[in-house]
Length: 187
Image (cartoon, rainbow, N blue to C red):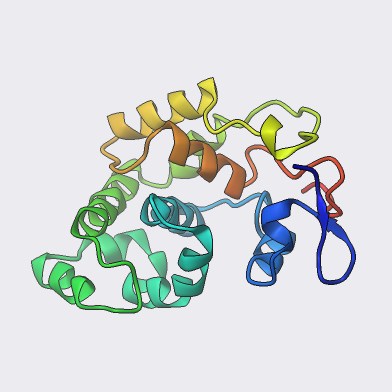
């Protein structure tokens, strides 16, 4: 599928032309994200998205931010059993015990990296390449995403496989997978 017109007539990636995805597509997706908080947030949201639509996660993002202390990894790393139970009762987020527990484990892994999460994730950035022509040209997994997932797992991260690692790479700007005809300018 090629780029399609959004409500304003501008061509966009097909998934980004929908009204509930437009702002995220145009202003966030594929833009560089740096720092522990921003990267931990995107890593967490990608894990929660597994098996769900991204639109659901975006609608719930404000509640996720509140529930997980603004995605401050130090604060989340200190969460305990009572916090897990609190989160399981929070209808504003996705209430999945495995994903909640993985988020706490991942926060602890971020803290253990002591400020090196940014450098470690960004070391897997793909070399600049032409934008894909169609959605069929966008891979779900790459050798780099497989290597990133393996590396993060070796550092204690959970709920991060090659597919979610590639989605993270797209979301935080390690790769530009906006379609060639998409009106969004390169990051």
